[in-house]
Length: 190
Image 1: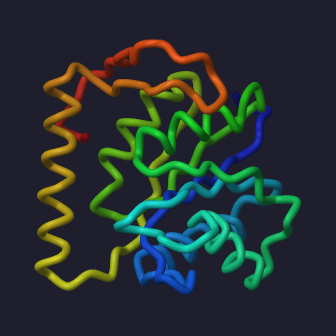
Image 2: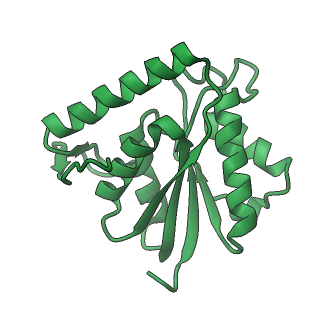
């Protein structure tokens, strides 16, 4: 929708037990700060709740990212409610519920470079009516960790393909119903 606003979606990444952001989470937040400066009037949705592998604090991961952004000049008015999710599909479904009928010009999904193809695929399935752009943040990882992440992403994309697309859980607060697959052809670009 050309008359809507740009929405920056920062996908969650690990933080320490004291809430400090990991280098990966900081790289995503820093990419969002750069986009925030380039896109006047944009709003930000931050994803990430709790999970044993990424956040065990008493506050959702999104809270820690919001504090980082506020400390670098982002206005509270520009941060929308958090998507307290724990995986990429939940990220997209919860963001969709948060945005509701808000007119969106461009939905900018900010994640690590190795995660962009899957994030793009999932968000396009959940937001077929929006211009979705996955924006890569350089993931500062040692080579063996990068390889592990790339293998994980390849396996996750294969699973999406094998199951016929994204299987959507109910949105937060929605009545429970069986998950429905949302199909989208996986191309070489994915």
